[in-house]
Image 1 (cartoon, rainbow, N blue to C red):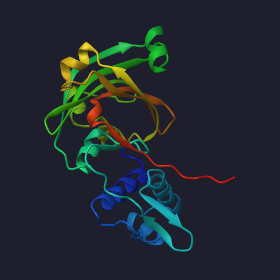
Image 2: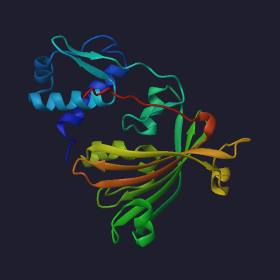
Image 3: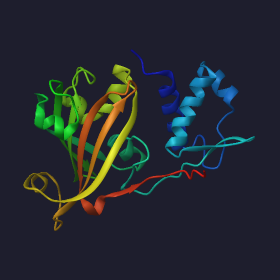
Image 4: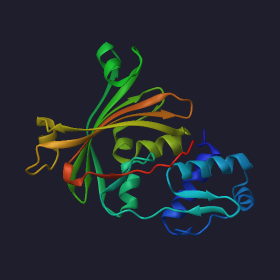
Length: 241
């Protein structure tokens, strides 16, 4: 099943904004033009633009159109405001990138794993442990638990490429919402074994729960980052009551 139409439009517009086809402070084509270009409904275009706005790529200006506010970020920066794979972040930051799978195991969720991740007891999950290399430096250790019935057909080879790309392009799954928690923790023996920590004895840790288009949590992740390489940005909108 192909990805939802609005997701395809969102990804295409996002790519064109990032590569400068639609430059910063310029305007996207009109809503009518986009409807004609993508052969879709007005609501579909508006949903794609809404997602870009949520990620601070564009902003709607009443009476003028949709202006591009995306600004290329420096290296080592990743988005908290949007949902971005590390492969996408590396490409955006023009960094070399590779992933090495350390573990790929299936579990049935028990009481302990339920309390840790939020997955229902009895669900089948795939546990994937991966080391992320940027410019040949082991910077991130990812621990992922993925709901098997959603990420069906997952393999270690896919995990070394992009799980999100596989879900969107091969499975037709929409990746919609994520909830994140940030903390700082002491490095463990496993961290020291797999990461290039140098003299650092702590890590920045991002814990996240990610949901698909049906509101199903399909992923629980603990992402452990070398501290000097940990720079994230986010964005917010002021709401006046």
